[in-house]
Image 1 (tube, rainbow, N blue to C red):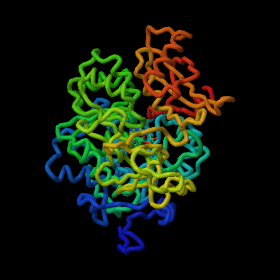
Image 2 (cartoon, helix red, strand yellow; image 1 turned 90 degrees about the horizontal axis):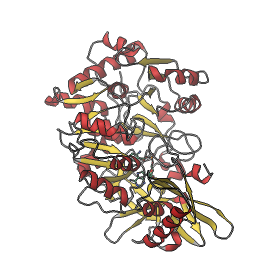
Image 3 (tube, helix red, strand yellow; image 1 turned 120 degrees about the horizontal axis):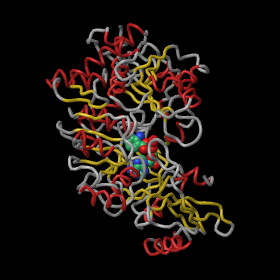
Image 4 (cartoon, protein in one colour; image 1 turned 120 degrees about the vertical axis):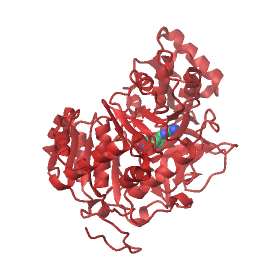
Length: 545
Ligand code: 3UK
């Protein structure tokens, strides 16, 4: 393949299909990118699948354990061979060319990870999809990203076939399944060798559709360089894993929290990962015990649920526990430490920035704070006019670093990126010790009787009460106050939901935080609405459901 010459205007690229490149936002709408750290100097040609996998094998790590799950146990060399065979199927049998978007659809499994690496190694663009998506949502993604091929767990193929009816770009769906699917059969007939396509560092490697709560999905595009930059920042500086570590967790690979934590970062560390299909709070502890996992990635709600039933499983293999996706309440940090002895590593990340940009390791961790900007990133708190606010003041969190937001053909680019800053949509404050303290999503601040009340703070207080298993706090219209603070509460077993408990909880909040923040209304629920990534769906609570 002929590669374009590198010029300042046109970075070197291997993409033949130029749809992604042509639908990047104009440069002036990009965030300012920072590459100050020495480890963030990348060559103009870079293929992140080659860097993460083939380099490990070339460095002599071929026989080391790499991926387990779904009955398989692959070394780095095994994964490399499987990736190469799948890449051959993609290129030689399905006609995939560099720059094509390939949809990946399946629950977490070694096969899904191999497909991701194969797509990227072949210079195509991996587009993950959450397993629970329905045909309508899949069609929106297929259309938006102009997907040409799909690799799909055969158990999820039906929904994809119905989605395809409305999508003319999707020409081929190849199912895989428990080692016996069409893709495995085709791959088995291919030789285990494949030369990585020499992509440009800025060629797009993946498009991650956001777990946004409403509206048309936004596709955040990330290059091969973005992937390597993410690996060089948070994991290397904050997590600091060892080659013997065994990673495990719940976030889907279609969610960049899971892609990083359960695939990219273990590979970058020369460690191994466990990819299990079921990692809900009732399945994850057993898997941790079975695989003797040492590094766990999951969401706050999952840490709460597991802490409540700890003792049923041996979790002593765990060494590092990472929480992201939502604010980590102090009560959850305490409960997890009591159950396992481990201080959770909290970190805020986003689909737009690929992974975590503010975090604290176990030594720095402080209840109520997310942490400090990750080396490689810079953070600021801005007011409505975009001016920087001093410590102590609540404002809009703004981030710059080696990764940043570039939506695929989306006018919302100019909402997320302003004056070179990525605006995550979160209200934050810098404390006297320099730590960043999460308040709420900017559009979730409750203005009640002239006060600004952050729902998560009230949730944090409620979770300190023994009767509260889960809760969600939102503002609801109120004649007297404009908005009233309302709490939806899932009681713990053994506590009776009724007027006595309501009063008890209200008094408890008044004693715990400023009294004006107490929930004037409380409603008990059996469960709260959450996304597949563990985020509370506040908009559903606001709508009364
Ligand atoms: C919220 C947090 C407080 C915050 C993500 C780690 O969650 C991820 O990506 P999404 O695009 O959502 C981003 C938004 O989620 N959030 C995430 N983590 C925290 N709020 N404390 C936290 N620790 O509102 C943020 O703007 O779904 C997380 C790595 C990769 C990710 N994609």
